[in-house]
Image (cartoon, rainbow, N blue to C red):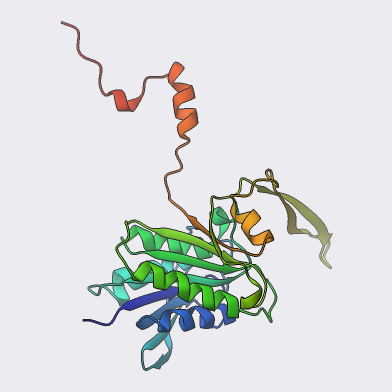
Length: 267
């Protein structure tokens, strides 16, 4: 039996503590190739580089692990791995992370971590985005590593339906403090931003963006936000079909549906 090949990437950069933790998770299951951004790329979502050259550099190689730095976005890293660096090889599973900070709720749309995971699923490869709800430089990744191994082991233990992309968020705490894993839906919250205006020494105005998360359903107990607040690892299967099916039905009173096909020609 051939050794499994696990692709690892992230949006915090190849030198981040979270990438090292993700490689630790992946090494439990086979050979690891990591292709990660040269610089932090948080908030890049599905962005790709089209008007600048891209540079690939091997930064580390040891038995069972290769780490590359790539000058593009997280999605660029995934494309580079599948379409060039590992072209012709079967990639058994992809991990994106472990991200510094949660990617629950609407953050899944902004996240470079989840952008990369979703991109991996386009290649018919099971993909997992792993995030830890801690932005601190000294974040403790032990629980994220433990539960990451458990979830990946479950995926690799039996047949799964493809495409598959999981958004996994781990709360802050030691492994023994967490309460387990919950399968969830995405919370319907959103961000309300605020811009702080300043002036530089030459009098030019500039802005810093900040904001606060608004949880529209704080009492719902089946969401990723509830799971994180209550000490559970949140697992949300995600997909790229953004069709609003309820509105598709509602708007049917104005327009014919494409599903109905072409009307019959009158004779």
